[in-house]
Image (tube, rainbow, N blue to C red):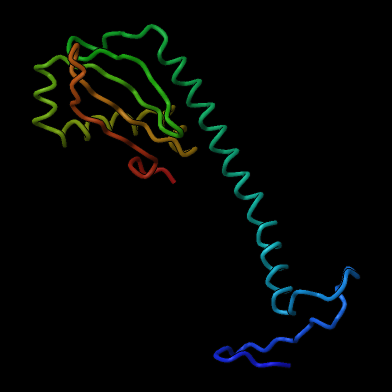
Length: 166
């Protein structure tokens, strides 16, 4: 046994011992072999979890794309005299509703951002369909721009925590 300076671990010099595979001397110490086995075992457990997460993300994105496609049928459409629904898009796990707003209403929205968020939040959190999407990990975003100019007004996002969904 040799002791490396500054290290408390001891290792066996195995340069003269045959490899377990019978291919000449072993290049690994007992500690290195242990660490390699531990790392390989850790990867075996991590890969299925990573695969499951990516599969869930894929399935959620697929569902959101279907929702966006179906919800965009007939757009643009007037929600009221001030707001025009331009349709939905998807970015990863985010379902985005694009809305155009008349300039006078846009000014009111800019002046009352907390009121805008509260009203949207109440609407989103009371919608069973949106709640089911958020429970699966979706984020809902409302993107407001001025009618004709597309000047940004506001963007509000909601996730399951915003609606108290576990």
